[in-house]
Image (cartoon, rainbow, N blue to C red):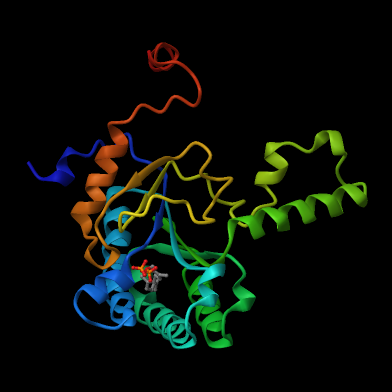
Length: 250
Ligand code: FPP
């Protein structure tokens, strides 16, 4: 029996978030420059997108570039931006063919104009697709996102649009960049690092975390299936006891 066939399609996470890590180390292992790792990481992006859409996952968020990544050497930042533009341009047709909608979260105005334009075009061109939403986190920082949300809420409170006593989890959730997406049930990080690295801090509050030693450029469909199967073997209790969970199931 293949790994894929072991997956229970009635118990899929709706939303999977991925920290694509290890491109640089993968390249170094082969005596190649870091950018070689990023280029090879694009094939892994294709594989997980296809695997997710095929099995029926509705949302997938990929951490493609963090706010902290702006501090990398200039040539690496430029190479990543160029890769982003060329990949999106090449993949728009495939996204449309597979009815995948593209979205972004993060401080997109920080990206070079060419990348912004390419993204806007892809978002517009795929906006009616409904099979899966692929969300690219670009120039993204979860702490900045939360600060922006607090600013929005404060402004609304000062203007009398919301009462302080009415501020709750829902108001903050609705002020985040991710307001239109459900929280991820599963977060995958590759390359053996076990950190969240300023990624979806609020949204991952109850997510299952899955860490694999595989470097991102080596991550293939079967690795994704393994992560889904691992998720399906976990019991999600949300602070309740096992007995309470069993009762809600029956
Ligand atoms: C982390 O590896 C990876 C990145 C910062 C960039 C991810 C980008 C891609 C996979 C390519 C383009 C993506 C899209 C969506 C078109 P690292 O450089 O931190 O690796 P290291 O930890 O081994 O140094």
